[in-house]
Image: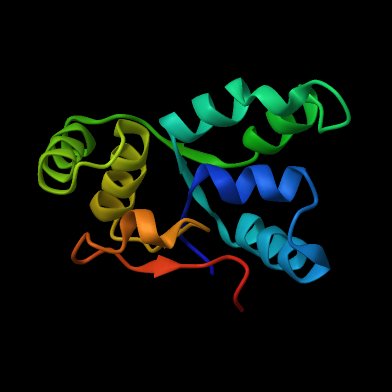
Length: 130
C-alpha cells in the first residue's frame, strides 16, 4: 500500500493499536513508502475526542502526523470536493479526503470503504486486508 492517501480512521486505528500486529506492520510500511494525508485528516486526528482516558496521547498523534506528507486544500481539491459532495452527498470531511486521493491519482486507504465505493475512478484499499 505504498503511495496512497490515508483516511483518518487508518491513523486512529494505528495509534490505538487496533487491528493487530499485521495491520501495524502494513501501516508502518505505508509510512515508509510515503502515505499522504489530507489537511482535514490532520484536523480530525488532532481533534479526536478519545485523547482522554486510557487512549493515546495527543503528542503521539502530533509526532506521527509530522512524519506524513500533508496535501493542502488546493483549488483543484476544493473543486473535486464540491463535485463529490454534490454527486454523492458524502460528509464534507470524507469528500475532501476522497477528492485528495482523486486529484493525486492515488488509492485511498480506509476502513470505511462503503462510504466511498460509489465514487468512480477512486481506488479503495481496506488497510486490514493484505
